[in-house]
Image (tube, rainbow, N blue to C red; front, side, top):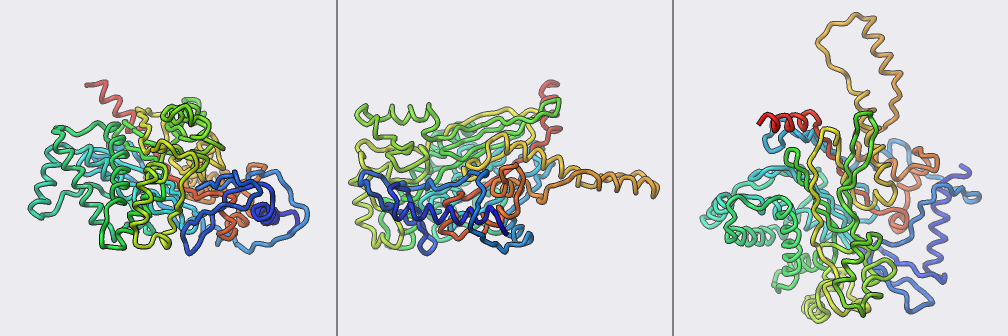
Length: 531
């Protein structure tokens, strides 16, 4: 196999490893030890270079490079490639008769492709049972998966109880007081590989109860509106994560988990769909993009989130304005918060929120912090914490018949494909899948007519290999060459990289695509006009 992309992948990786260990440039390096992230400073001739806590910068996305020497063979057959890509795919049809759904969601499809081992991304989907709407979330962890895991389990509950009426909250509290079953709050839509922190579930339930008790005291008869509920839930959960790590306990397992959750971090993007009302809460650099088709069939992308990083001028100005002028040059350096963290908003990451004194006190009080792989450090120029917040930006969008789908994904996808490319791929997949779907008809046809219909379907150009659109997006993100086509050799090479090299070329990728029912959306507008 000559002139293969796979050869280039390995040669480039070897070259960049040499840079890591012997060159004059300094890169951050994520090393995996026994399934946990451990970050250390790369060797450098310059003592002034900072360690980057997350998001190593060793990506190679140039698809036009052609190798000329080394010949590397990858033995992944198409069937094995498909197995890898489809391991975590999920598809769920929403019941049109569900009054919570109002028929505006047809289905959602989701998938995860890991780069880190273990994967640091998480996803969630659930229907609110005591209030209206459906919730969808994508969570991108860093410095370990603990925070993303915790947030993916808890944030929907915090949002849901914030939306509940005073009467429902009081009913739940009365049930707890009398030790009776509590009203179910959520109906989860889980993949078989999804799991929960069972060891700490009782602590999470107790703190959720404290939260709803405080909501009862607010005496809000109808509950919060969606935007307020989402913003309040994000901030309250982040506060609980911080407080849980500060409480001493004799239960060492519980103590270890709370510390890991607080000292790792996670960005989050959560959407709430209630009929034609769509709210998106975003904290960090996950993204939600709407796919819109106008009357002449043209597709366009409408971003409903903004990345919270140094490339967002308003976000950069916000961070700088929250600290003294003397820190203007240091609060963001090398396009990272304090020269270390790429996202400017995230759950956890208490290293950027607590005072140095509090960090020392908590870690010194831990039984043995070393096995937890908590990176103990104090950033340079750490003067006026907190530097990081989990407060989300909440966007409202009133769904229209031309709004066909919403793509939510971690930055692993957006590093490889832009918004318009993603919308185009989903639109093409939607078109091709509709061609594949058999048209069910009660009319009787002659054998000749049926033969003509079969030939027509066979002649239709259907190129997609995946029924799940999230898998389709991952295949194109990882395997597309410079000609815009999926290259099997490139795909095999990218999926064959050992775990210590994989993170140099791509991040974990998590995608959820929500399909909207245009007919149901249009019907709601008509009902509103009639009223």
